[in-house]
Image (cartoon, rainbow, N blue to C red; front, top):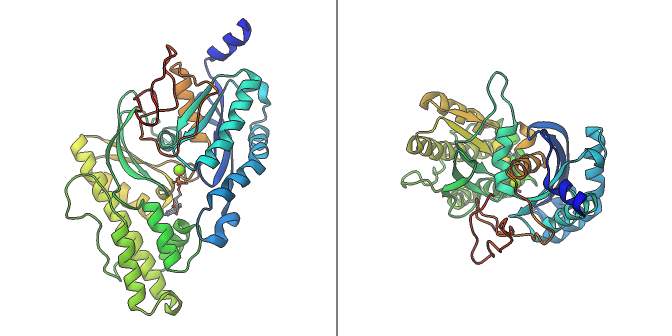
Length: 378
Ligand code: ADP
Ligand code: MG
């Protein structure tokens, strides 16, 4: 056992870490060297599984994950040109997410780490999204490192964080109702554009006039750093109704509605981000999560940064939506700090950022339960 102990505790200088992500409707595996160098990234989406239902069906998501988890991991190893002997550690998303989906990745990662006696760590999904901005390299710029302000805009979350110099995120503000990505998905449905919604609305908006339809700017009159998107979604629904429903819309009006909606979301995200950057006196803003793939948002935020004197940093397009590179990257940072999880690690559907209710402290005691989470190295 002494030998296996050493292997589990030790990490080489430039560790090769396998990351696994299955929190929602993507099964993903990635191999990362030294926390930044992407050796492989495999993502298998489930659009076809969920499209008939217009949204993710949790039971179908976990069943599909079970079907593909081995293949996706093998594909990542093949792409990296490595076998399991070359892996120095395993990182896996432990939450937040759909519990059934999370459990598939988690069980697979545990089995792998156990059988190979590898260091093993659970990762907070949103910390993963933030770290994606640290992995992506803008040509001619040094890679992003904490401290910075992070804006997470995904299907499930819209929130601003202060990422401290040790990499620990603290919440500054978040949505009071729908997430921005969720609003994209719902508006896509209202416009009859199908699933997944974000890219479809964005494509449709290309041919439209963003000033054609007067939509409210969410929370524009409120102070603070919170967001809200359910009112905007309702406003779009009313505009469609006024025109006799989605079936009766001509292509031009549909595009105008999509463009006006996209502009309203982008403007509200930019306004909140600018307010946060001023309040934090920060010069670097990481914009991450699926909606960070939106071209209009990328352009508007970069322009605001140029005006305000901050740099807006976006992950590469394929690292905005769910992927395992970000999990391997966040996991490498934890493993390097000496953080390890044991095989009692559970899946959590809801976890505040900066918290790891699944983790035991290094002296062996429990550091938290779902009822009383304790801040540790999330
Ligand atoms: P989650 O982690 O919450 O599952 P992801 O980070 O994978 O979410 O992002 C998915 C969300 O991003 C979806 O709501 C989708 O509509 C949105 N999205 C993806 N691409 C775009 C885009 N180009 N424009 C706007 N929204 C997008
Ligand atoms: Mg995500």
